[in-house]
Picture 1: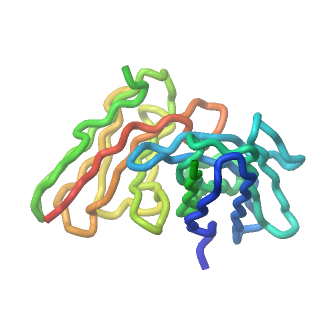
Picture 2: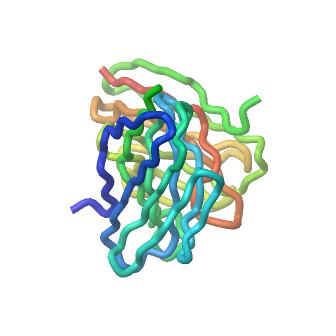
Picture 3: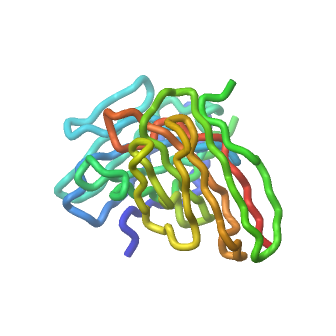
Length: 112
Length: 113
């Protein structure tokens, strides 16, 4: 079983739709969680951290469910420019890069 | 100018050759990382460095070596390249605040024939 699992998609949604991605992690000791965005053939970019109480950044909402060991990313009113691959990242212990694990990503295409 | 610069951007070479990938940053960050990305596997950490005198192996360090020549420079070497090292390689940096890489270079697409 992978340490961090994501549905690879692709998710194809119309412009303006709401879309949600889930990511599950296997290590209950995981302490830090992040979402990255990666455009085709480009470098990953940190989108947002995920806090225990959930957090929002504009149209993006991230949530953490420790009991079920998953994190989610919700995108509201999706734009064409949201088309990208979204990477879930989990960090065990929070202090060492060695424990940082990337998911393989979920591909999103927003259609006009 | 990019904050994290990788050279070369693309490289095709033959099995057994020595390859060096270079990374330089203008962020002033202490922490630097080398990752490789393969389809369906996500990014995997090769090596990381928290300062000039600190070098650590990551998940998949076998077959690779690194050098932190200065705070701003972190290079990755493949001493004798093999085809399964064909991948997209990323350098990244972060500041002291967290372990997550915050700034990535544009990547180096490496093909070993």
